[in-house]
Length: 149
Ligand SMILES: Nc1ncnc2c1ncn2[C@@H]1O[C@H](COP(=O)(O)OP(=O)(O)OP(=O)(O)O)[C@@H](O)[C@H]1O
Image (cartoon, rainbow, N blue to C red):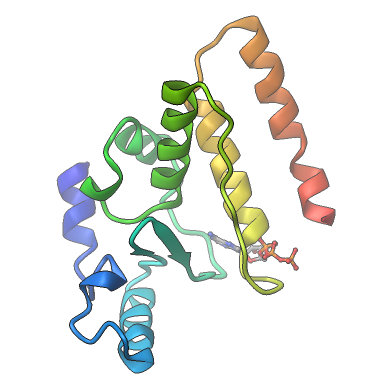
């Protein structure tokens, strides 16, 4: 799966900091467009994830993807919202400290969907004690509230 992902993610650069002309807005937009046209909606700027709303379903949020991104270092796989969720989840467990993922963008950009993917990832990755199940169900049930937010 890892190799398949790397093969699939071959358009432009996966991290804007790798752009030769990294100060140019045109170069930034060209990279974003090139990747988007190949259904590669995610690109990093260092530890920040840039996401473009595809406005159609992509088969990149299934169980296989969740397992591939689990416990893998941020930069070892192509950019994905699961990588952000995983890094945050591991920091929370490792440091025993609350974590925050800031999602920003204009209306319709895909913020709610992104937060749902993060909840989906965390729910699938957490262990199965009674307490965890209870919190997990609460988190998943918060989706309708996010929708009206
Ligand atoms: N990753 C994605 N894959 C497929 N479709 C998406 C994705 N992200 C967003 N969309 C589509 O775009 C629509 C709008 O996205 P979303 O509701 O997440 O935007 P938003 O940024 O939360 O908007 P608002 O600020 O107005 O609440 C979704 O209903 C969905 O159809």
